[in-house]
Amino acid sequence: MVSDLQRIGVEVWGQQDRIRLVHGFVRGKCDGKALGIPEAPSTPHLCEFKSSNDKGFKEIVKKGCKEAKPLHYTQCQIGMHAFGLSRCLYYVTNKNSDERYVERIHYDVEHCLRQLARAERIAFSDVPPARLSDNPEFFKCRFCRHKAVCFEGAQPRVTCRTCIHVQPEAGGDCHISCQRWSKPLSVEEQREACPAHLFNPHLIDGEQIDVDEGNEVITYRLRDGTIWRDGGGERQPSED
Image 1 (cartoon, rainbow, N blue to C red):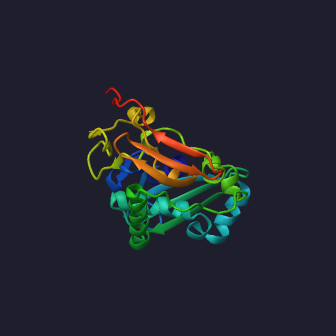
Image 2 (image 1 turned 90 degrees about the vertical axis):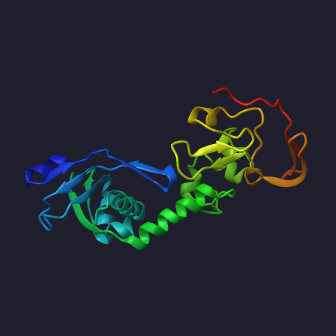
Image 3 (image 1 turned 60 degrees about the vertical axis):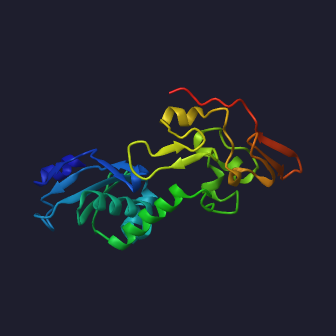
């Protein structure tokens, strides 16, 4: 796709330049930047390259990026915002026929800032966001690896990200810390967790009925009526 652009005299650079927004919670890489697009040769464009099956490709051609692929549209907007660009070249290949679709997208500051604000609310909220659907047979839920947690009462994995002590931080390279041990957490530490782990009560499929702050134990009545006590393990922080 880059070669296609270069053959018509378009300069392409910056592939895999990093995007980092919302205190590091929104991250990604761009597919490139381009100068010399025939419709606006002096305007730098962000490049967003995609491939699609025939059905999805035809929908994009019919409806355009914003309506057919709102996720792609938001990626374009966030990329333009991150690099200070006002145009994006949305370039899609049909995986079945090798047909091409190209659309120039203008920067939509309102849409972009709304999505970034939404991401920030989710990152700093103690409450998980609403489910995509209340129907476990909804196609996106049916194949989700977290379906058992969301619909069947299974416990989530024990990591720092599921712990009541975790604290998102605004700014800095380490954007997750532990309130229990008053320390920043590396990604490895977050995966490992520690014996002081206590599940965020919003992740447990039951009613919180008691809290023993001295022994750091939270008691729940689960959906099936079982009484379950979370916590009370050995109190040692994980090693750096």
